[in-house]
Length: 274
Image (tube, rainbow, N blue to C red; front, side, top):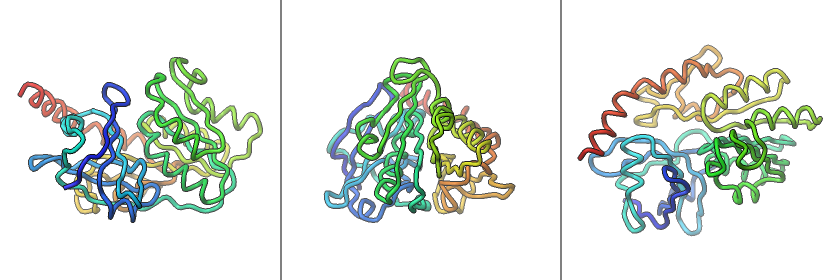
């Protein structure tokens, strides 16, 4: 059992929790995730570790209400406990002194981008973070990203905050301005990561993407999270979650993510009616 020690809603359907998990807080590294089960009847869902404090023994989770399980999780309050929480899982982000690293976070993807930016900065890199959201309220963790970066650029689709446009527009401007980029790390909606990778491939900029696919066990046994990378089958939970963005078959991945949408809607409708 893992007790919730803090909780806040960032938007009406996006929330952040600090959860007691001392062993995970001590061992976790940038890029890794956990799998949780809310209660005895719950399903397993993966969530990236957005932040952690090894001394205080907590990890931070950011989740968007998209189905029954995230809805149930959002109803828990400070003092309540999550039944099971396993991690850290997945391969951590490879950190070295690249030079100038652009970390791109889209919407809720800013949360998992945060520890990556932290680690890249601590690794001696110059970090430029590009944060994007459909609207101002979806640009989350701005202050945390500023603390982890040398420069932060903000974009919104509707122009309600920062620069009007997409994260790819901000990245293109950096390139056009002659900013030399050694590495791009992109985390967010698959369509965003696809177009970031498409842009960087044109300029031969090494690009890493963090994938958030359907998962069940998180240990490579069920195969639900499989993706095609460079023509080979990979399991996101154990081979990733980070891969070469120029080799990921994003179209196949996006189709697989949609596979259980009818069942997810049915489960949510039944829960709300009860």
